[in-house]
Image 1 (cartoon, helix red, strand yellow):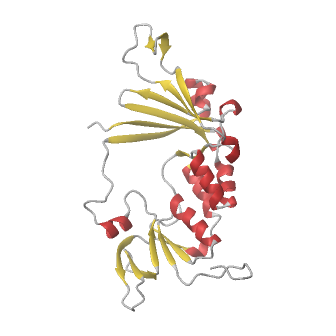
Image 2: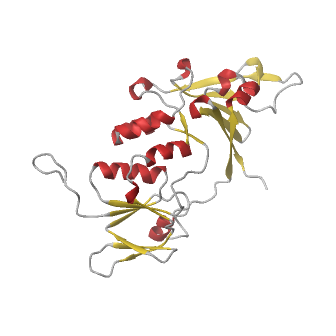
Image 3: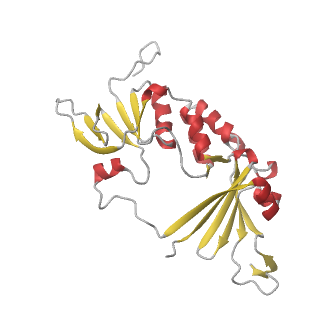
Length: 272
C-alpha cells in the first residue's frame, strides 16, 4: 500500500514462487517493484533454461515494457532483429511440401506455375511495430541470464523440488510447502510457475483431469550456425523469420544470438 507521501511500504505478507524459469523470474521482477516479499523455489541447482530460441510477439514485448523498463532492456540486449526491410514481418510463409512437385521439382500453386520448394506465398505483418521497438528472437538461456541479473540472489532457494502443499497449523491460514529434501517453507500464498509438468497445478486441481496431455504433435529443435544456414538457404531466408508449410507439419526458422545462429523447429505428428 502506498503511504500518503507517495513512499511504498513493504506488504504484510510473503509469497512463494515455485519455479525459476522465465515466467517465475518475470513475476519476481514485478513483485520487487511493488515491495512484495517473496522467495523463488527452484528444483535445479541454479537458474537455467532448456530449449533453444524463442520468439516474442508484439503483445509480449508490450507487456515487458509495462512490467519493467529493465526487463525491456534485458530483452533488447538479447534479441536479434531481422533485416530492416523485414522488421514489420512476423514470419514469411513459404512452400514446404514436395508431394505435388513434378519431375522438374516445380508445381502450380494458387494458379502460379513454376512454384518451387521454399518459394514465398505471403508474409504475416504486424502493424505499428515501431511503437515497441520491433520484435525479435532470443536464445532462452541467454534471456533468462539477463532476467537473473534483475533480482537479488537472496530471494532464491535452489534444490527445492516441491512434493506437497498443506495448510499451516498455527491458525494463520498460510500454506506450507514440502520439498523432496525434507525441508518445509511457510508462505501466505503459493504461486505456481513450474511449467507444463507443474506439481503446483497437480496439487491444487488434481492429477487426473487438469494435467497437460500429449497433443500428438512433436517439436524437434535445432541450432544451425548462421554461416551454414546461409550456405543452405540463402541469406534472406536464413536471417529472417520463416515458416515452411508441409503436409501435416511445418518448419519454422528465425535468427538468434545477434545473427550468429539460426533456430529451427520441425513440428509434426509423432510417429512410432
